Length: 78
Image (spheres, rainbow, N blue to C red):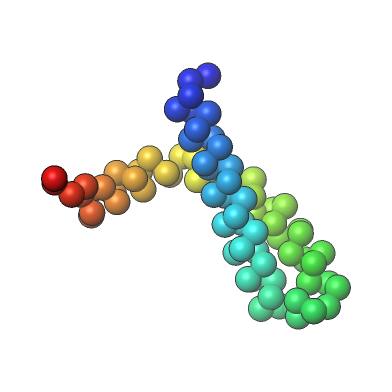
């Protein structure tokens, strides 16, 4: 496996982990008080459901997102 693929997998894993954690936590906070015990179980269940979906999406969509971002904000000419 090439370095580029390994790098993309690592970035997708980290990005999807952080995004699934934050998004599932925010959504669960709208339903449960973070100061009460059911919040943490619900957050864990939502995260376990979301991360396997977020990881392949992040891996497959990131090249498209980079291309769109490059067109919207081209690199500066020096």
